[in-house]
Image (cartoon, helix red, strand yellow):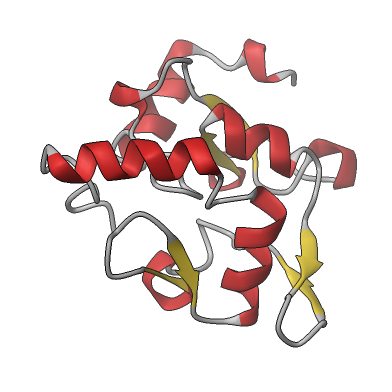
Length: 144
């Protein structure tokens, strides 16, 4: 089913579960210039389903960078590993924020590979995090 074909009910359920955030970079949709996509964690091109457990809200930057990727290489160990799976894994286990709360830090090979593959520390996203942090709107509270 193409992403545009998800019912309003499904989209609402997926967004509510993520508390209005991209499930990869934790950007908040209310501050985005474009609506978030409802994306397949495991792409349909790789036998992913349309079930709620395989759907995640994704900002356009993460969605574009992820495309149909399911794995990437950890830049430290040079080992290929799966990308972060928001239904099966804990964000806090694989990621943290740097001291300025502007950059995500990978705590595990999965976290580091996901940061690289999805470009979770892209310049414009860092700038947005910095501005939102000053306004006490970042990091988003109670996402986990």
